[in-house]
Image 1 (spheres, rainbow, N blue to C red):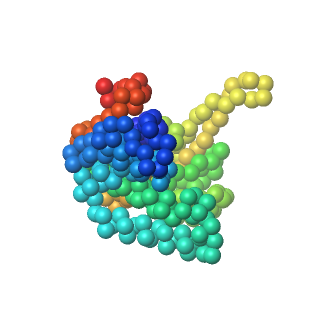
Image 2 (cartoon, one colour; image 1 turned 120 degrees about the vertical axis):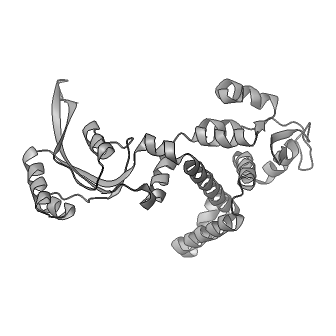
Image 3 (spheres, one colour; image 1 turned 45 degrees about the vertical axis):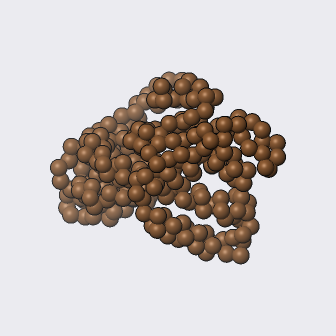
Length: 288
C-alpha cells in the first residue's frame, strides 16, 4: 500500500480551477473505476476544494472497497463514535482545541474511518489466507528472556524444573525487567536458536538454556563474540486463542502492497489520468 498511496495521493494537475465555481477539463472522466465504482475528475475536484486533497482519493477508494466487500457500516460508525468519545474523555475541555489542531472533527472522523476500514480489509485478507500465513509466520504465544552469564540462566532452569513459575523463577535469580507474554513468530527479532525452539515445539512448557552468539566490535575496531543465555516458555500453540494479537502483528509486518493489490485486482480497480498513469507505470509495475 505504501507505494500505491504515494501515487494515488499525488496532486492531479487539474486545469481551469481558478475559482470556486470552476470545472475541470474532462470532468466526467473517471479517476478510479471498478465494479460499482465511478469516481470522476469533477468529483475529485469538488471534494478537494473542501478537504485535504491528500486524503480525498484514499477515502474514495477505501469507501468503495468497504462497500464492495460488504463491510458492516453500522460497525464502522460505532467504532468511530467509540474513538471520538475516548478522545473527548482523554482531552476533556481541551478536546475542541486538540481536534482543531489536526483540522477539525471531520478530519479526525475520516482518519478513524480509514483506519477501521483498512483493519477490516486486512483481517479479511488474513482470514482468507490464514493457512499460508500460519506456515510462513509459525505463531505461538510465549515468553523469552536472556541472561549474560550461563550460571544464572542454569539456576533459573533448575527452578523451572522444580515447578517454580516462569515469573517467580526469573525474579528469584535476579531478573528485574518486566516479563511480557507475546505472540512470537518466525519473523520476531530473536536469535535463530530461540526462534528454532518456538518453531519446532509441539507442546507448552519451558525451554532448556539456549545460547546465542553475536559479534560485537570494541572501541579499537576489534571484533569479539558475546553470548546470551535464553530461557523461553510456550504458553499456547493454538492461534485461535490469540488470533487478534496475531492479526495485529500481521498488520504491522505484512507487505501491505500485497493486500491492497488483491482488492484492486478483485474489483478491477484502475487509475485513469495519463500523468498519473505515467507515474504509476514508472514506480508501480503491477499497473502495467
